[in-house]
Length: 229
Length: 229
Picture 1 (spheres, rainbow over the protein chains, first blue to last red):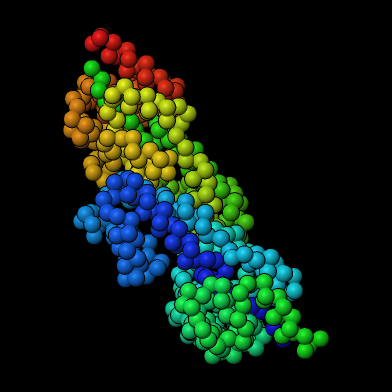
Picture 2: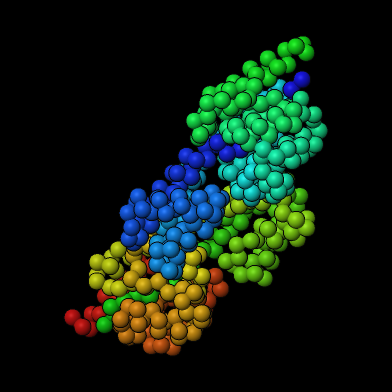
């Protein structure tokens, strides 16, 4: 019987890539407005390369861009970029459609809820707090606790232990088949592929379910649990 | 003849203390909402003490608060505080009334404008960018450039050199008599005390002028320059 749902965070609960794209575009426009003397395309390409090299959570991306271009940080330009980035991020960081009512519905059904994310604690929690989701989850497991990334079984087992549930009592939902689905399956959970957040054009996620809207979770839980009624 | 105005930033152009107070209050409420188990008063007092000890620009104030209380950072609580802080800061960080039109008027009169601030470069520029003031000033001198705080003559002389003006061609306006007025006077500038930003209940600022609204600057410049007409 399903008693808990484990959610991936980025691209499953929040549209992380869209947020990042909006924020970086806004920052580039603002930096050019403030005197950055390269084209929008060149700036976006360089920023993308910095994120590729340093990781998507890298916090000094504009410092690095300035240093690459000028050998030093121009604070007039960089601060314009940071402010534009922050404002655009806040505007763009939203849960996907139906995430909010679906979570409320799942809570009303008596399910325990967890997040298992490979993001660092501070960044994961900041994103949850920005969308006012900090009270929803019984358990939030991030890279700071596990030091192992999905598909490692470590984060999944840590979540199960904290939830006080067995693997076959939990559904895992995520957008990244090779990490979320493979990892959750390996410890014995049923899995749901969040196709609406897929950025790899995944053909065969290998999950038990494959959904285009998170609201489908409610029916999946009802179906899974119908044999116990 | 007055050809340039040198502005202090915090509590002269922007109401820094009000911004800080609003942001810290919002953060404390959000952290208590997220599980912080101390009173509002106790939290405010502890945060004030941290700022007293580490300086008002200290960026890890909530980490320090968590560590003092629990010996570790609770990211659920801290992220709620950071998000609330950022939102309140953005809402509260505004130029004082009449700053915007006064600056436009001074630019139309052909005056060069500078900022001389003891804040670190990044923080000073972020505040200027948040209020969209990054294009107004010909020169911005911060602690990173000078490594000397007002009333040292270093930041004032650096501003004069960058403006290519002599001391008697500039007015300095600031809210802190012992730093802004004393320092600017020592290099030979006329001075204006921004009484509207005074947090010390200053009786005798020792300045040439003493104003309750920044818009009075326009008449002061006209008066100073009338003998040249």
